[in-house]
Length: 284
Image (cartoon, rainbow, N blue to C red):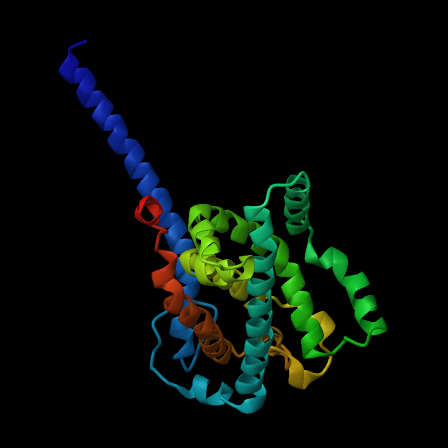
């Protein structure tokens, strides 16, 4: 067979595979875009339903109906307190736990990391019954601080694993230079390591916050008072409590509910794309 004919056949097969891959990606993209499109369009649709359609008329009545203290403001404030407090506690504890794992060698490092990895695979529903019984016994049930502690504890295993991997990318030579100038380990962690692993801190922060922000089961089990329920639980009130679903109000609430997560990502997006770029610093 002539070489030109073989080459054209190879290019044709390559174009076919590329076309099939593009079509597959379009199908996956449509699967993600359609629900988002329904949320945005239904939020301004006075006659919203389950179908994705262009609204007959635009209205902000759905937002006016839900922008009340009981429906939106109080649940969102509770969510910010719970997830913000638990995220801060998770990041601090993960940094303190990851630092010795990254900087000091021990026979227990690998078993400890494997135990952490195993803890991340435990389904949270499997441990909620003993956790609920424990919280009742120690009077932490129906308290914001108890839920924050459990949120942080549930996120710590994977946060430590991530933080340790990012911390390994910061050269130890920079710390040794700080130690020579009289800094101790705590000072080198705060002033050298953490500022240089900004992308790692951003990843852990966003991952922990987003995971807790969308968690329904934990606050539903540990919080009993309606005035302490976060938005992830109060959104359930839109689903058929009165025999029908208010789709327009549900979509409007979903838009507002998603806003803090989007804002958090926008705030840390510049750090997410950054690299360490420490080669010149080490050589210098």
